[in-house]
Length: 379
Image 1: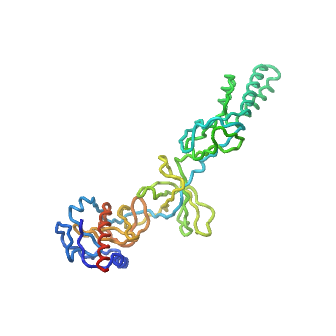
Image 2: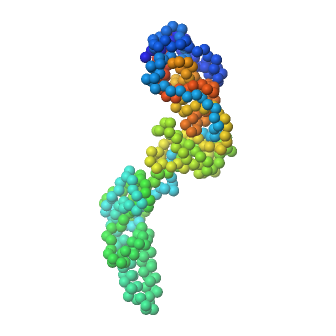
Image 3: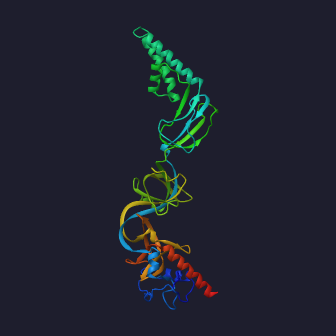
């Protein structure tokens, strides 16, 4: 595909001139009518524009949408990192001395609440079960005698020795009713999540407190967002927050500001804001960098365009504006806040300007070829 050009300064010089022009930039001359061909023509189009045939526009999937003035909610920008929700993060350790007989769940696997993760052979566990059975038999034998109360107290103490090992009351009742001692002590997941760390393997000797697993429920995460000192007065807890990541460009993840820190970082002049974000599909990962828009509850009118219209060209924020049939002009813009899939435009556009929302890749390629051609002419 070819484009119409005329001798002009290099593109970077043109962009610098555009920066000094007014935000409206609405008095530009319209290029001559399209001839139906994409071949270059002398003195056609402007040096910062691309001219395409109707067929090229159609096959390139180029669509436009007008810039609009809309009511928007003022937002405070912040950056930060995703981390585990500490309320749903647990470090499992051995509760009895013995040998790690078997591991049945491994790092990276998803587990459900109550699932057996490992089994430990422990003489202490066996002895505690035997003590409960003996106390239960004694209590049954002394039922209705003066020693009944003392026997019941002894049984209660024996039962209490099993509870710190992770044995539940219903499991102790089953032990007494069946009189069947279990050989291995189960290590169970206290809630559903992912095993993010496995610290032992089958055959390891263990003591109380030895690390076995770390489990995290990733269905909700925290984002530690840095809020600048100048913005603190406008921020309140429990407001809505929108998070964006580099991993999923164009997508927004809603959250809620649950905590504003009490200490100012003297070096960065920021305060930590804790944002809780739902993550049922586990697409978001702890450690990811995020950009945050924190709602302040104030509304105002602003000129906005779809985020898909905003492009980066020569390390600058630009948009392509349709100025005539098949003619698309490159505009340098200054952006403001982003929310709801739209971005505020502070300079470079006027209300009603038709910006390209899809197909910009083709225009960027043509503009780059044009820029290289102009540089060649000046060599």
